[in-house]
Length: 164
Image 1 (cartoon, rainbow, N blue to C red):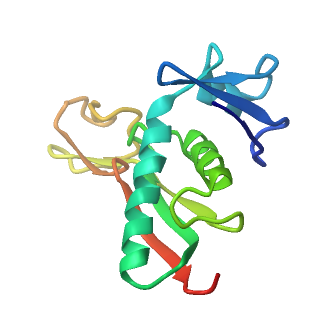
Image 2: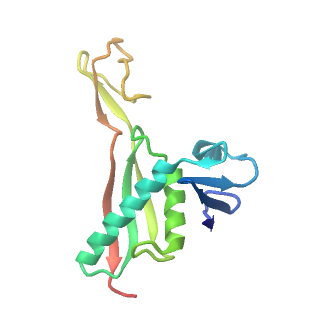
């Protein structure tokens, strides 16, 4: 199976081929930072593809239950420490939207809401922005920190209509 995906994030269309459950991205060398972030040795990281597939399935099923015939917009919250790359998630969305998966159409939008990471030291009570889930307090140096935000990955909302 071969699909061409066009995205405003990428300077050229990407060609996706499905081989042994790995989606390969065929194009010239990635010269842009966001391409290097998503693609490692020409292979698109698949877990964003499967995550987006599940998002579309959940939203489509729920929209049908509420009498919608199409989904106009999906809002997803992605935390900085959620291990989900927003650009890869968006690429997966464009791929599935082009296929018309679920009750998506060519006008369906995806809004990714970024949740910044924040942690609080349980010893000195200072709040800070952590680089990792397990971190040392920048003030007292102790590993007694609690993540307050940044791990979230969820569907926040969707908009749909019953117009075809």
